[in-house]
Length: 329
Image (cartoon, rainbow, N blue to C red; front, side, top):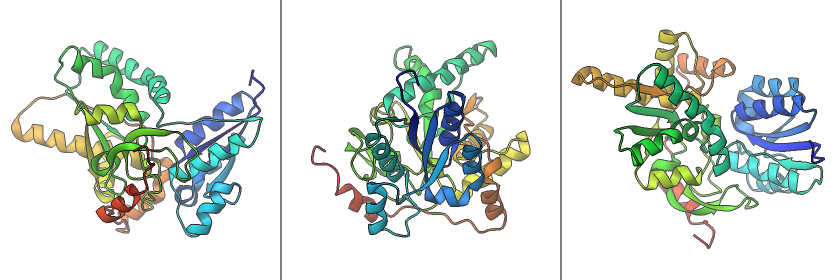
């Protein structure tokens, strides 16, 4: 605002980041344009309603508003979209308007670093409780929530040799860390964003329309991927129906309805607790609950009505996407 910028553009998957930026721009009297992945735009209407309440323009991506969107629609007119596509549109929007800057809510390393305020606060809370985590679970899409929580604990493991385990949890329908390859790739679908080294499924990867819209991204943040590659951080993938089963157990136990994204961390955490019960081992298990599910109740209805399907992205389609990596890979 002080630099004369009048508008911000961004992408959002399920809508949490888009909602946050909408409120921030509202408080600073800035305009905001949000390209929301079409699959989530259609299935999570009240998240876009919230963005509009705070004055933002919310556009289903891919759209006819940008050259990137029109190119993608010409090739895949019925696509549900992806975060990579939405990033392409938001970046192009900012690049073609002098009064507009682009704001990214995940993936790039600086985002991970400012998110660590959460992990630093968490360390203080553990100190107050006179406890320390043995294992930490968090959902992972592009990498903001999970690294934000665990990065302040990583030096404890590397430098102080603490016996602590970090587990990044993702969908089997978008298995970036568990099935992707570690290579240089574009951060968006069209190729406008920088090339970064990360675990990737290929920049033109289009995942199925699962309800965890915030986790449908082809890559992950470089710092996170480096730690996974060096086996400091583990990764696991969960099916859609089992994460809703875990979310229901959590809701009935805690009175909190978790977002589908967060439920990817709850499922393996419950499994870990059950293993400890069987072995008699005592562990402090941490779950990063990164969002509520009040705007995802239609997904819970689908689960309770037996309408949800599990998706495991075919290995052959992953190979096809990876064949199109940039030459620098």
